[in-house]
Length: 183
Image 1 (cartoon, rainbow, N blue to C red):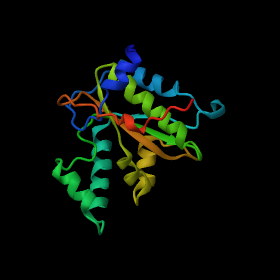
Image 2 (image 1 turned 90 degrees about the vertical axis):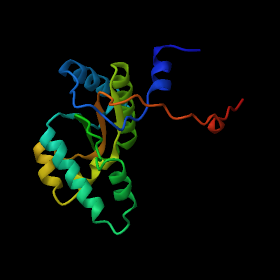
Image 3 (image 1 turned 30 degrees about the vertical axis):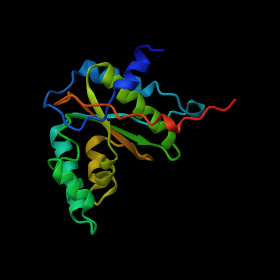
Image 4 (image 1 turned 135 degrees about the vertical axis):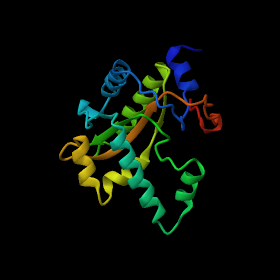
């Protein structure tokens, strides 16, 4: 059984390398619209969607995250990032930042899935990226929140990086042994 949605789910992969080409405003609006179409408990929609295209802001966020990782006692994550080119955000030209209200974690995950599938359907790459939490929760967090218009009363939910893939990726191999049918 196959259709365009199942095909997109099967083909989508976590893109960890992007070209400098920025998606069009039309593409970004379509992805943002898909994000806010996500279902939520009691339709509370406990999120905001902030689309960051400003390269200076993205570079500052990335530098802050790398500095934090470099100062950790356990250097494993820092070394992993540095071995992949020293880029936490993989040169992505756009970040969809999802601030959430308290208790909105599950709904945020659904928003992220909508963003990644919408991006894939438009020929773009994406990766869900929790590393953006570091600068928003760190010493310069308030500064970064002000720079991007982070809403009062919200906390970092997640981010999704989006752009044109620098190379083709491969979807992960699904582990169908994790599936159980009852009845």
